[in-house]
Amino acid sequence: GTFGSNELAQVPSEPWWKRLVNQFRELVIWILIMASLISGVMGEWADAAAILAIVLVNGIIADVCSLLEHQLEVGRIKVRRELAAEPVLVWGIEHQLQQVFLNLFLNARDAMPKGGWLTVSTRTVTSSLVVEIADTGLGIPSEHLARIYDPVFTTKAIGRGTGLGLSISYGIVREHDGTIRCDSAVGQGTRFTLMLPVSVVRIATLIVLAWYVTEIFRAQKTTDQVERARFN
Image (tube, rainbow, N blue to C red):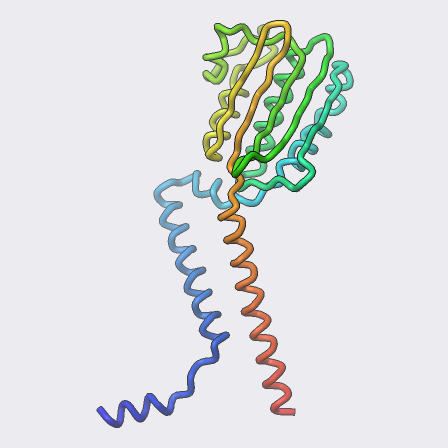
């Protein structure tokens, strides 16, 4: 027993930065194991979850506006952008959110066959991002409002739409823990209001993790420099 204690006492303690590296390695291994388990259980959803990222919503809106710029000009539709001055970040899947805004913009275009105004605005309210997309088009009859998110339901003429756009958009918004609401009046226009959570905790966690990794490499670099100086 005494011999064992003396033997342990003679073992030099491990540098603190090596302990951090080992802890980080264990964390990565744990994440990979969990991802593997989730992949086996949830299949394709795990692939989608793998590309969750911090998304700049104003940037997505700008991209969609650029994509549809020519179509809107041809349709004599003017765009008014009232976007929040500060960067608006959400945690989500970028290409899915692009699809949501593309669907809503196309709906607005189709609702204004003689031209009009398309207004898109963003603002933050407490811990949520609010996006409003409004048009000055034909409007939706009140008896149809309750069904607009149903698959294949459409008020458009045959050949003008499949009725899937709003259904898909609704599903994507819900998957992002958000809500979507429609207000409309025949002859006055339609407004869609989206609310998406601004995930401050998740974003802060990523920042802390990035700082943690940076500190590990900085400590390792400092230690290497000390070791080189000692031998020189």
